[in-house]
Image 1 (cartoon, rainbow, N blue to C red):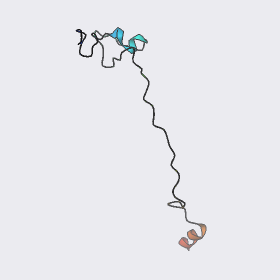
Image 2: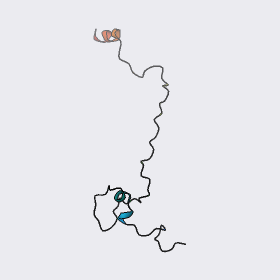
Image 3: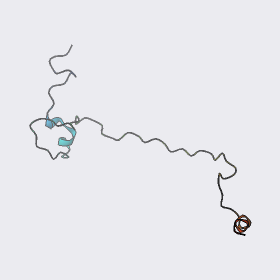
Image 4: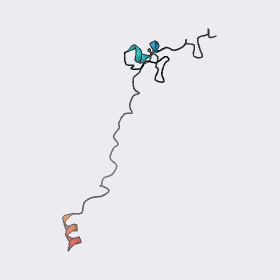
Length: 77
């Protein structure tokens, strides 16, 4: 049972409860919280990046190579 503290069990949000305002990162002076509101208890770290994994080279021969000197001479002869 919630005790009249809003749908999420919290009271009404205020700018003073915002992470950005608490850390002096907010440049807005609004009457109400803006769309970027985050609770000041929030852990605002970016998500972990995917790990870069190198594949083992499967080809034993290149898909395309420059023509050899002999092949170039034959083309232009």
